Amino acid sequence: MTATDAQTEHTASVDGIAEQLRQAVAGGLTRPRRYREQQLDALVRMLLQNVSLWEAALAEDLGKSEVEAHLSEIAFVVSDARLARRSLRRWMAPSHVLPPLALQPALARTVPEPLGAALIIAPWNYPLQLALAPLIGAIAAGCAAVVKPSEVAPATSALLARLVPAYLDPRSVRVVEGAVDETTALLEQRWDLIFYTGNATVARVVAAAAATHLTPTVLELGGKSPVYVHRSADLRAAARNIAWGKWLNAGQTCVAPDHIRVDREVAAELVDELRRATAEQLGDARTSPDFARVVNGRHLERLRGLLPGGTAVTGGEHDAADRYFAPTILTDVDEQAPVMQEEIFGPILPVLPVDGVDDFIAATRDAPKPLALYVFARDRDALARVERETSSGALGRNVVVAHTGAPGLPFGGVGASGMGGYHGKHSFEAFSHRKAVLVKPASLDTLRLIYPPFDQGWRKE
Ligand code: NAD
Image 1 (tube, rainbow, N blue to C red):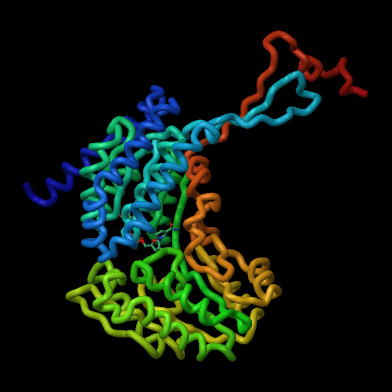
Image 2 (image 1 turned 120 degrees about the vertical axis):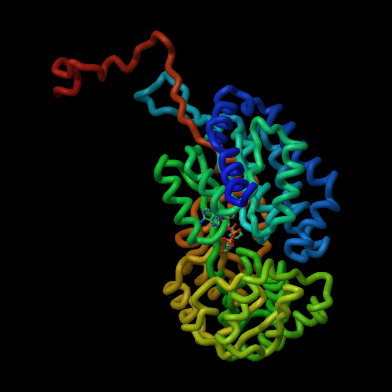
C-alpha cells in the first residue's frame, strides 16, 4: 500500500462518523445519568490501571518526569472526572425561575441537554490532559465525541487510540489519530460542537469550517501571558513561583509566564532571584529528571531563533540530539524582535524594565488579550489596578499557572486567546445547551386576551 492509499483509507474510515455519533445521542444512548457515570468511572479506570504506560508515553513525547506527568496530566484528569461523577446529579438538575405575572399560572425552567456529537481537537503540550479533560465535559453533558489527539505527541496519541476503545463505549466515544488530512476530513462533517485547543492560525481554519454548518466552537488558544513585578513585591517568593511556572514542561504551557515586566529599580535583583530559584529547583537542568524536553527538532530550531532578541544572562545552551534547551533568562530585550512578537512556548524568559504600573498597563493594552496575566505586589493599589485595568482569560495575583487547578474557575481565553471556558462544572456547561422550558396548564388558556382580533381588546385603549 502506498502512503497515499494509506492516507485515503484512513480518512475514508472517518466518513460519516459525526452522523453515527449524533444518531447515538438522538437514540438516547448517552442520555441516562447512569450511563454517563459508568463512562466517567471507566475513564478513571483507564488512567489508574495504566499509570506506567501513560508515564512512559509522556516521557517519550516530552521527557516529563513522573511527578509532573501526575500533577499536570494523570491526576489532573482523574480528579476532574471524579468531580464530574459526584456532581452529575446536581449539574443535570433543571433550574427553576419565576415566570412573570402575565404568564402565570406557569412554570419556567432551564434544562441542560446534550449538544450532540462533539469534535475535540487536542494539542501536543499536555497531550493527555487536553484530550481527556474536554472529553469529561462531553461525557458528563451526555454528548458523544471524537477525540483527535495531536500527531506531534505520537506516543500519547497512540496510547489514547489503544486504550480509549478498550475502556469507553465506542458507540459514543472514538479516537481518530492523524494530522492535517484527517483533521480536515473530520472538520468537513457536521458537528454539534467543535472544541479546539491549539494555536490561533489553525483556530481560524477550525472556525471557518465550523461556520459552514453554523457549529458552535470552543477555542482554547494561547498568546503572550505577561507577568508584572511591582517594586513592592516579595522578589524572592515571586521569583520562585515564576521559575516554577515557566520551567514547568520546559515552558511549553499555554498559561506559562511568557515574559516579565518589572519595575526598573528592582529589575536586577529580580533577575538574580530568578537565577537563584532556577538553580535551586533544577540544579543542572540538563541532568535534572525534573526538567522536560522540547517536543521536537522543529520547535527547538524555532526557540534557537528567538535567542538573538536579548542577552542570555543564564542558559542559552541547547542540544538538538537530546531535544534539550536550557532554562534561559534574557535581559536587554528588543521589543521588536520575534521573542517579543510571538508566543515563546519554551524555556526562554525575557525580563524587561518598566516605569511603574501605568507603564505596564499601557504595554498590555497595546497587545492582544492574553490567556493569563500575572501580577506580583504587596501594594494593594497596584494589585487592584492591574486587576481592573487589564483584560485576560485569567488573572493570577502573586501566583502563576496554579489557577488551572481550581475547577470552580472557568479556564479559557478572551479575544485573541480564545472563547469559551471549561474545567469542573464549566466543562459540563460547555457541552450542554440550556434549554428554556415554559410549562402552562393544558386547558386554562390565560393567554387568550392577547390573541387577535386586536380591535376589541384592551390594546385599543
Ligand atoms: P498542535 O500542532 O498539536 O495543533 C493542535 C491541533 O490542531 C492538533 O490536533 C493538530 O493535528 C491540529 N491541526 C494542525 N494543523 C491543522 C490544520 N491545518 N487543520 C486542522 N487541524 C490542524 O499544537 P499547537 O497548535 O502547536 O499548540 C500550541 C498552541 O496551543 C500554543 O499557542 C498554546 O498556547 C496553545 N495551547 C492552548 C491551550 C489552552 O488550553 N488554551 C492549551 C495548550 C496549548
